[in-house]
Amino acid sequence: MGLTYEESDLARIIVVTSGKGGVGKTTTSAAFAMGLAQRGYRTAVIDFDVGLRNLDLIMGCERRVVYDFVNVINGEANLNQALIRDKRCEALYVLPASQTRDKEALTREGVEAVLQQLADTFDYIVCDSPAGIEHGATMAMYFADDAVVVTNPEVSSVRDSDRMLGILASKSRRAENGSEPIREHLLLSRYSPERVKNGEMLSLDDVQDILALNLLGVIPESKAVLNASNSGTPVILDEESDAGQAYDDLVSRYLGEELPHRFLDIQKRGLLGRLFGG
Amino acid sequence: MKANIASSTAQEPVFELKSGHFTLPNLRLLASNMDSLDEQLMARVQQAPGFFRNTPVVIDLSLLAERNAEIDFPLLVGLMRGYGMLPVAIQGGSARHEEMAEFLELAILADRKAKKTTSPQQKTPPREKPRQRSAPAMIIAKPIRSGQRVYATGRDLIVVASVSSGAEVIADGNIHIYGTLRGRALAGVKGNRESRIFCQNLQAELLAVAGQYRINEQLEPAQLGKPAQIYLSDKKLLIENL
Image 1 (cartoon, one colour):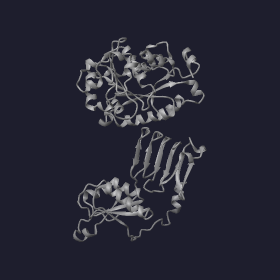
Image 2: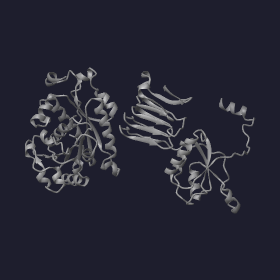
Image 3: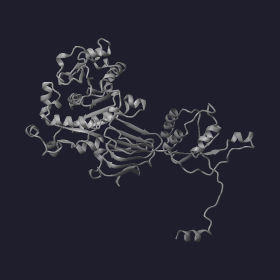
Image 4: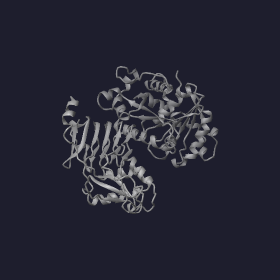
């Protein structure tokens, strides 16, 4: 396995972002963080969606939240008190968002201090960005080394992702310091080959043509994602499902492995996809 | 073949050198602030848009409030060109100014007042009208994303990537896009009617040359998705597939 990013001692900070809501940022953050942790990397996943927290639900740790991200920033708790260790994978920790504050509670200095502290002990830090292009989203991306731009194959989502890429290129620490720009990756989610064929959805080629980005993976539209969310299990743990396998491929690809993209054609779809596909 | 032609025509004189007198407008620079200059020039040009078209202009620096003020010559020249003027020479500047002007291939005209007092080591006499040299184009090699806006002041803009829908590219000169144009492109925004837009794949939201514009809905469907150039002919915006 070519572990391209392992050379650095510092944690690699990955922001999962999109602009539009409901495209699968939190699902991706949870699956991606779990995938990295399963491979033995110490991974922290942070919910930046202060006021509308969801990550704890998707991760199935909502009943174990005592302190949160904002508490740590305000010095009301230390990081170890707020981090929740995942019960299924011991290399994975969740830092939940506060549900009772608003996004202004995230100060740049505060976020930087928390990330710095995490960077000492973790290999990867996954930041689950809120939707929109306001304060919370810009805080989530500011310190990033990598960005995973989650996009649905429809025009408005593609345009919002495009807008997000423009912001990533200008409003980040790397852009302001003039250092190597953030590595941008495209994740196309809720992809349905049938609907592409019927002309109801943009094809992968259409999206690639507009965004011109490195394609990290395509996640098929799948009932498994909804089931996973409802049960508080990152979908990557559902190894039987197409979406779970697609996320697993995606994590390997992020770590430098070259894998063909799957679930792009109607014929190759699994049983689940055939049963539930549009 | 070429040698033949050369020898057969060598006998007849091809040129004559004569001196001529021209009265050129002088742009007397009083301060070095280019932003204010841009604003005030624009106001002036708007009063008489045709007046400066292709007019040679001498930049007079003898009245500068601060004799040796640092002047951004490339920007100054670019600005003036953007308004249709052709800066050809400077006059009355400091040694540093003259050095900069020479670099931009502007002629250096002798200062009339200085001429009377200091005779022996005069500066270079006025040269023949210099070769035109345009300000270097702004080149962008990354995609221009939705929400981004790029403006090439006083020069051409070259984009070696695509321009997304919701993005805006603007230039005082021409715009070249070696990718798909899905956003808005405005060339010659300071009134240069000679400006053109070129793109590899036309899907623009809006096209404009010197204020004449057309929106996507008004484009011929047959012209979309193909390489095109857009220019003004008789105040009419023409879109021509390449």
